[in-house]
Image (cartoon, rainbow, N blue to C red; front, side, top):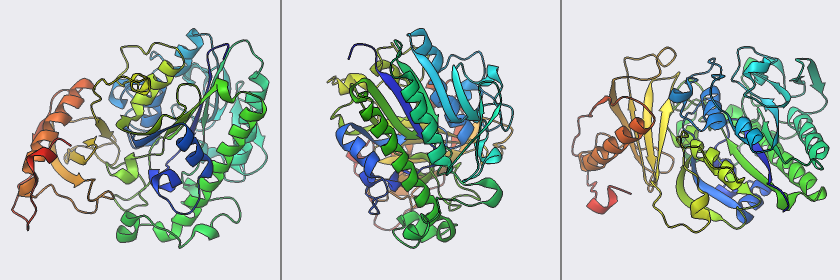
Length: 450
């Protein structure tokens, strides 16, 4: 490799981790992602730090928590004074491009130039779900001119991605390309998950995750379409990787595949995300390319904000200290330094909530007297849930009132407060839940810190 690697971020919207074969889905939806995970680096416990579109995107563009970016709910544009991924890459000699949904501007369609985060090439829309449809793919170019691309939206966007790669393959500068798909997000005006024609039926009534089996929600109506969209996204990933291979760029190109948050199909609140549950916060994530070959299935708990310094580090760019996340690259290079397996989750809009996710435990608190649309944080929270992910990975039994699990709550409360402090939040009061003795449940001391 004669120059710094090209970098492509393949970013989906609202994709659960368990839609992939790498995470045990039996429907063969994602053979391309699975192969990428097998031969590259698979992040097993990849956790978003904000389970809603705009805030998560602000985190991924900056390496900061949403309360630090100021875009802690949808509708708050990205602060133009913040330094972003494309700016770091441009300073390092890269040319930069963005194709897809942005959701960090002030309009629905064309994104004002000063709101584009510093990307050079531009083909996108701010709230793509409001200005396009499954078979009506509409973007806006660098001059705010409307561009309608033919085909199913995933395919039309992928065509544009391949054109960009081909146009930039011989540049002296490497490229950093961020590709942001809307799929498998719902199409808002019909409240449906529209796959390509013929892609809904094969997955309707097939395998259903245990949380959706038990809790229902809109699963029966929507899961088939949702999975059909993911099948087409995986085919798009395959097309992109085929294009890279045909242009002899495989050994020179890093790909990051990830998503902003998951989807719980109205089982945890009255819409699809904005909760601290695994269905909302755990997403499929894998890297391929230089530095990531045969990295294996990583067991570290990795936050979305950790992906930013990891990408920079892998590209030969020193991650700035201002970033809240940690680069995984030292561990991939053989370092045995400790990795704190804890991911902070900030929740807005549906609630003002916070949660901490470790290898084994999920502990969440909520400010019941706060409005998640108007307030980003609180000085007081109530304990709301505790889940043991080792025995209950789909979070169907809340242990927060179990007397036996009081010690783990104490441990996680302290850890949550520390992580909130690292994110720049003032230390709040957390009101403990009253606990009672329940059945035969027992907790051994060694399990508390897992």
